[in-house]
Image (cartoon, rainbow, N blue to C red):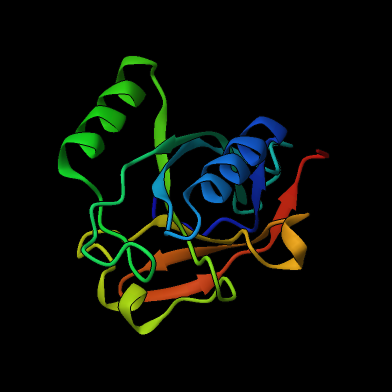
Length: 160
């Protein structure tokens, strides 16, 4: 999938699990993968180009194996394989990666930029800030990775 979605959507179940994983990892960064689907917006049969949005339906935690997990993340290889296998077994599609920023805004850091997957074009990359706003609400920013560039996506959350 290389067409940039016009927005991203998070189901209530995915939101709750993302919140639980990120809050539970504090003061460390949480990380993992997201599964879901790309949904056509205009299926009217008109000759307009098809617009798509990204719907995240499941969150899969991957253990953070970084040497300094309070400041960075690194997928534990065995856990990443398990998460990917579970998605395939359940016929889920990988649509993104996520990690948290425990003490900063959900904006890509220099380390985040340097750690982007080399072949990650056409996938979403989510940053979550669980500690902000007194912990009552998450600050979530999805991005779209195209080449080596991250572009912000609008987040349309299904009511929680």
